[in-house]
Length: 149
Image 1 (tube, rainbow, N blue to C red):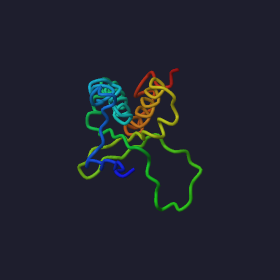
Image 2 (image 1 turned 180 degrees about the vertical axis):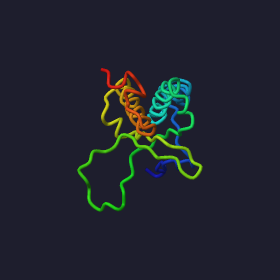
Image 3 (image 1 turned 30 degrees about the horizontal axis):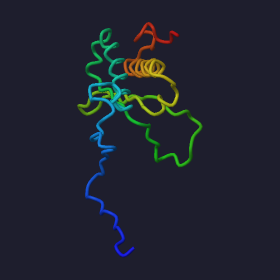
Image 4 (image 1 turned 45 degrees about the vertical axis):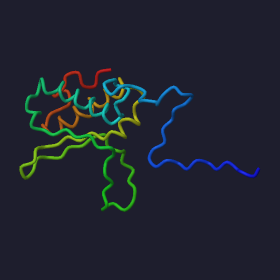
């Protein structure tokens, strides 16, 4: 062993695989396929679908901003944890030239659902409840099918 083989120095940049001469690996699915959409994007689409469904009946919803946030903020004023359940959504009234806002919290909704259909139903319920709160109506008035199934 006069001449030991030295390991190759790693090339700068990301390491790429070319296993068995088959070529470089690419993405699992092309960008236009739903598989490549992130969970946050899919969730935002569910909220948008729900809003579009309600806008047909309530055109004034075009003046409301709908947001998706990961989790609700913990208020700094309360130093201890409370026994209140984690909210699934919330409203922010209009002020100083900003429109009213409806917020849906993604992670609490995802945790409470198992599949896409169940998640879509819960998202719609949350959006209906928050819109009803903003408009000062009952959820059944905002969407007559509220609470079914």
